[in-house]
Length: 434
Image: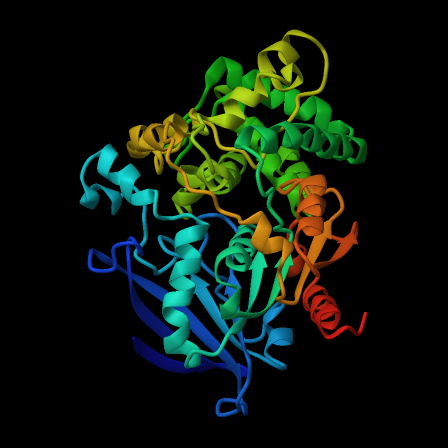
């Protein structure tokens, strides 16, 4: 393990790097590097504080890059030493992207490599480094979104490594196939779109106008992204976060500009759309997103795309042929994304192989969860666009002793938007104060 220590306002930070096996079942084989950032409040550097391990949402996102005691971190540092882990393949942990994956070989080799980037491998990484970080003492895990999926796997496979589990917007279905996840998702997304149009009725016409323009022109944005109608619809991913509806509205209101050649999409609109839709910064999200639900011999087989066919109201061509509102989508990955996005285009065949894979291991142990003895709490957001509330509550009932806080005060990003209040509430629940 290598380290480097420095300071930000109110915080002492130590960058840590670890070597772990790519395949924990074969520790003598290839190793990859993990990066994690330790944070402790100034003045408490030498205190014997309990550890809190943070697992970011995603999959595919590195841990937050905070400045000082931003967001929930300030609350956590009151009584914890925090480890912000870049999960394998993200951030500074041996990144997996279009630039690095060709080092593995062709698409088959890349797909086999990426099969080791799910919650099971991430939790085994955590256990592999825990001894070096804590001296062997168990720690509390804080899992946001996909990080909560990882925390649930942790409870299933290595509860001895945990003093407690805190989950925000991330209780997974224990046995559902990806198809079940998306059959529950599309009606939720439709509700979010309806709520957006109720707030901003002028956006009904604006969205149709943009879709009609794209159906005729299909422009390539400045960064090389092919903006199709389906890609435009996927801007609905904004509707799952705090302020996302407002952001979508402001984006749509400046979509067009008059030029000597006629009306065109504005540069400002194109720039914002490219930044929102590009997977350049988190390609693993697209590559292994459906694989995080793979648990049996059935392939995921582009589940979101197939299941979308069961909901014809999302078909843009049918919408534009009539006079109804265009429905946005979100929190789903589709094969056409690997044609539209230059950050994903070279990985199309790799993604196809992952979608066809049939050897996914089970991720959760219902019997062990039913006998759980680790104190656990979870924030469940009442109409979370990203994680189905009914699935989350069913899982909560299946985990012995897990306490839930169900709230409609926040969207899926409640840990960030409600910080430090959300974390404070969950820690109080662990203590039994509420």
